[in-house]
Structure formats: structure tokens, C-alpha cells
Length: 588
Image 1 (spheres, rainbow, N blue to C red):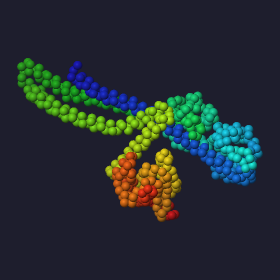
Image 2: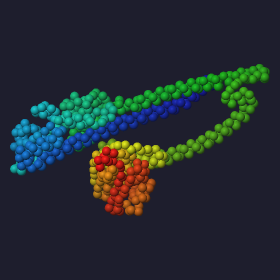
Image 3: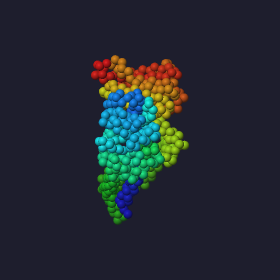
């Protein structure tokens, strides 16, 4: 094998580890993408279940209000009719709101044509009277219109004795429209089924399946023990990651399923794999081409000339010289001063040995640093991984809920700390640019309620966010960070009581206030509370004391004044004054 061929082989072998690393990365990315697709499917199922729960809770409240009406309890049909027409007008989503008396006949309702109709023949009415509590019926068709509906019913006790039933009829089209209005990821779909497995709602593309039974692949999970994710074929015939909540585990008492098409979920990885393979191949070909050109013109030809000159020396032509105009000094020195080659090679070997020693020391220092950093980062991640694996492996049984809770808290702490460190870094580097624009303050308040209600409830706190429709001029992202940090501090430093978030108009300003019943702050300690790495409670084990410093920095950039009222042991009120939108400021 010639020197030139060996050079090509060395270059090929040098590139091979990069190919192996790229392939390993692609495999790992594929595994992560599969896990992510499954998580998205299950999260969508939970969100849809929550939406269904809200709809059912609304029906329950409506029927509870109907059952408490004096005209309903006393059986006053005329007054009851007027009241139910008003209720129906206030809740137009329902097809009808009616009341069945103790005799089993409809004696009042929003649909006059139904008055006097006997309802004891309806299974859902008998079931409600037998069970004595609120009942949600499954898929049904209206006896008159034939429109698919769901019946909600709740018993009440009549003043003259006996029990009646308050009814509400919801067209399935309204429920389906509400669920379909939710934004879904690309390639996502959902299905909702009743106790019998009859489909009551789907994505728009699969509406033809409403009223039909679930496919066998889904039906077998109708009454599973716990929510989970499987791979199956969706209603549209497309393979998908299917996350579902069975009837026994669903607060809404329906089967909820959400799917992410496997092709759509894996598309980014497939494209990345194709791009990676193309880049690797292009890099390999380019490296071989460069090696071939370099070896041919800068190694092969000069060495052939030198060897030809040496061959002439062997024949006694000592005046022979190789005419080499070479850009590499080493090759030129070989041709011009062959006798100094050994000395120069020895000198270069020493240089190489010294550089190699220096590189080894540098790599050893780098390895020690990476090992230390890896150890420190791996500890919390291992805690999370072990806890979640136990939870998933055992189906989240009661003894493991503490492990899951610890994992959730660890994730929350790591996420919050990382967000705060990033915010501080942005402020330090001056890249946290803010831009005021007209915005509805309600979007920030909704975000705060979504982010902190569950955490407050876990501590036994009542978080009440008062909705406001006012329009203000501010940077939405920066203002959301400020309010979230203020509410987060309130939750962190309040052990009992409640937290109130609301707004007050003051002239051309809207003051957003966060009240709590927490530990409070002494007046002289308030300025120090806004310093970095200063915690309100020195004994706190969470956070780095960065939240209020971020609030202060963003408020100064936005030019929104901050106000604090607090008393130790009695709680605090943090407020920020935001300018109202021009039209609202004029109206104020």
C-alpha cells in the first residue's frame, strides 16, 4: 500500500468516529422524540378531560339552581315556566331546561311543547331517582328532532312530598364545537366516548364516527385502571401515540383519548436524520477530495522528485538537485539540506512531546471540571428520574405518590431557578429589551391563575384572581414575569390563609395588586428585599432570592412604579402601576 493510499485510509478512519457519534445521537433523539410524543398525547387527554369536567360542572350548577327555585319546589308551573325561560336564555347552549314533577310528568320548562309529557319511561330519569344524585346520560337522540344530545339530570325534593327531576338537554354539536375550538398540535386528534363506548365527540376530520362504537383497539381500554399511552391506529386509520383516560379514572366520567400521529411526531427527527446523513456524506467526500488533491500535489509529486534525485546520487550524479517550489517548509528543507534532516526531526519530536504533555494536562483539567459539573447536575436529575420511573412502573400507586410529588417539586424548583437565572443574565447583558404595546391585562391574570392555583392549593392556600378586562400599555412578557414572581413569592412565604390578585383604576393608571397573609416584611427590610440573592425568609430552602430583583429590574425598564405595604406576621401587598391604554385612560 502506497503512502498516498495510506493517507486516504487514515482520513477515512479519522472521520469514522464522527459518523458513529452522529448515528448514536440520532438513535437517542429518536427515543426522546417518542417519549415526547407520548407525553404530549397524554397531556392533551388530560386537558380535554378538564374541558369536559368544566362542561359537566356547569350543567350540575345549572340544575342545582333550578332545583332550588321556589316555584320548582312548590310546583308552581306558571312561575316556573317564566324562570326556566330566563335560565335558558342565560344558557343558550342547552336545547331545553325542564322539570319533571313527582308524578313523572314535565310540569314546566323552556320548551312549552314538552309540558305534560310523561318521562318515567326514560331510563336516565329512573336512574336519577334511584341514585338520588346528579346523573350524566350517554349518547342519545332527541325524541322529537332526532338531534344527537346528552341529558343531564338532578333530583330535587318537592314541597308537597315526593321527588322530581331537573333536566337539561345539551346538543352534542355544541359540546363537539367547544372541544374542537381548542388548538391542537399538528397531527393531533381526540375522541370522547360514553360508558357504553359510543363516540360522542371527535376532531372535525372524524365527525362521521360520532354515534358509533369505539374501534376494538380503543374499546379494550374503556375501563382500564389508570391513564396511559399506547400505540394504535386512530379513527382516521393513521398510526398514532394514543394517550387515554379510562372512565374509572376520569373526573368527567367519560372515556377521553388523544392521539399524535407517529409520522407527524417523528417527522422532525426523520428530516434531521436525512440532513445529518447528507452532511456526513458531503463531509466525507470533501475530506477525501481535499486529501487526494493535497496528497497528489504536495506529497506524492515532491517525494517522487526527491526519490529520483537520490536515485541519481546512487549513480554518482552528486550535483543532481530536485527542483521543488514547495509551500511546505519541511519538504523544501528536505530537498535543500538533507543532511540536517535528522537534527530537525529530533527537534520537532521534542516540540511534539512538550505540546502533547501540555495538551494532556489541559484535557485532564477539562475532564475534572466536566466530571464535577456533571456530578452536581446529575444528582437532581437522578432523583427525578428514579421517582418518575417508580411512579410510571407501578401505575402511580398510593405509596409512590410521595415520590411523584417530590419529583414534581424538584422539577418546579429547577425550572423556576433556571428561569430566574436566565432573566438575571438577560438583565445583566442588557438583552431583556421591552416594548410597550396595547394589551389586555386579563391575559396576564389568566396565566397567573393557571400557573399558581394548583401549587397554592397543595399548600392549603386559597388563591383568588379577580378578572379584569382593562387594556393597558406594557410589554406582555415582562409584565407576566413581574406578576408571576410576585404571586410566586406570595405562595412561597404564605403558610395559611389566602392570596388575592386584583386591579384598581387610579386616574390613568391600572394598579395590579398581590395581597397575601404570609410572614410579612419589616419596613426597614423592604429595600433590601429587592437585592439579589436576598431571601425574605433566611431559613427558606427554595430559590436563590432573585425574584424581587428581577421584578425591580423589569419594572425600571418598563417605567412602572412599584409599591409595597407590609407588616411582619400580618402579610404583604406588592403592587405595580401600569398605564391604561389611551382610550381607557380618557374614559377614566
